[in-house]
Length: 401
View 1 (cartoon, rainbow, N blue to C red):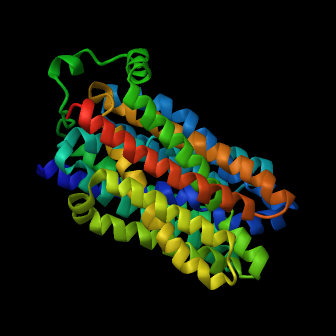
View 2: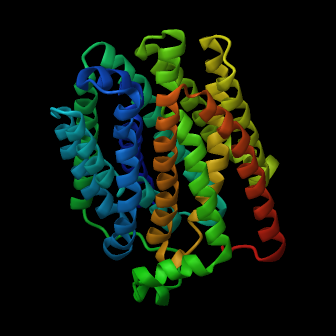
View 3: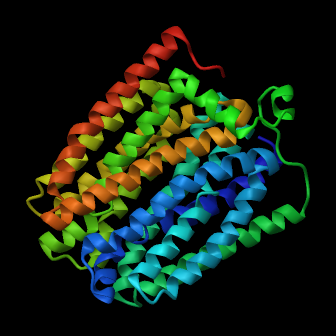
């Protein structure tokens, strides 16, 4: 890869890290927010779903912007916006106000990770793309770990507002470094799409139509949606479940999810070896199977300690499945990769928002155990079905590389 690529990758990784931390920061803050504002855990959970809904809807705006003005500059502006909104979240005076600010935060964050994925699709050949995307997973996983674990620690020590101040600082560092890189000049990286297609700057409606008429693209988007429903619906309420059922302090309950992130980090280090040995279909099957084990064990926990191996297996399984989906998403419409990848991410996060909203109703009515049971049943079906679809595509109509 060129020096421009290697220089910009860490900066984009830092922005993606901060975005994932912002996505998951409220998971371990829910009991503190409920106590602060006199609400139920499910009501406080709207801070999670508001971020996800806004993120999913706003994604559709960033794709064409990235295709038109360049993905790196758009990511830099979005990261700067995240800095401002995170600071506003830290000063919220009501739960409704915080929910509204979290929605704004999701709208700003939507311009980061999906466009980073699309930028990698532009800069990296398909043969190496899943490996480089796995490195991005390392950054986002560290953000996941930081958001979930530090959220609980800060809630128990300095208060929940300090978590949002820390996010504002992270975004400020990332946006400053990217602005410095932009001031250095240099042209935006070109994509591997045909020059004539790029010169036409594919219109948004044409990009969407190209996605909808392509059978394989529709399948990838559908798998992403249901992955979001069944993975994140249960994940958002795991710290609160451990706190309620076993009396764990939220700093401990949030810390348990560090193992989920460590599973993802292990995958990011083993991606090249796993891809070579079991291929994309094997990754999808094994990912779905491990997610079945993860949620099944959470539903039957005899003691909180069993959540540790369950979370590790869940993180490893999720990223096996999700990284394979991501790689195919970068190749759905190469001539408008920014739009295609943001539509993919929109499907994922709309699924997440629906999953969290439905799970909140179930949690307030009883416990999170029914949510875990449904996820343990559905996710292996998704993984094995996706693997079968990849096999069919390889045999009949392999995607253009």
